[in-house]
Length: 136
Image (cartoon, rainbow, N blue to C red):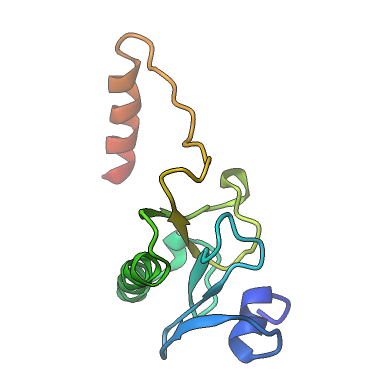
């Protein structure tokens, strides 16, 4: 896609702080990091969402997500990391090129986890059944 910012980064048309690159995957620092070292891991092929990826390409990308997470922990000496994927606008995806966030975490960084909800009585089984049916 010619107007995709990530495709432009892949082509070298827009500069980035690359941390990893191979034939299928590129990883670079997010320009608006949640914490320093926040890294984006993307397939070089343009695909809008994770469900658009072939299983083989998804496997290649997620293996590098794991590897980048390990390097973030070792290189930055952080306590952990979050892996994030916003899939679709409703989920907060801002760039229409699938990308995983590897976000370094410190025990005292002040970031909050997602809020949680509770199911009404037996509502969880109804929701689970809907998902099971969609999987068939």
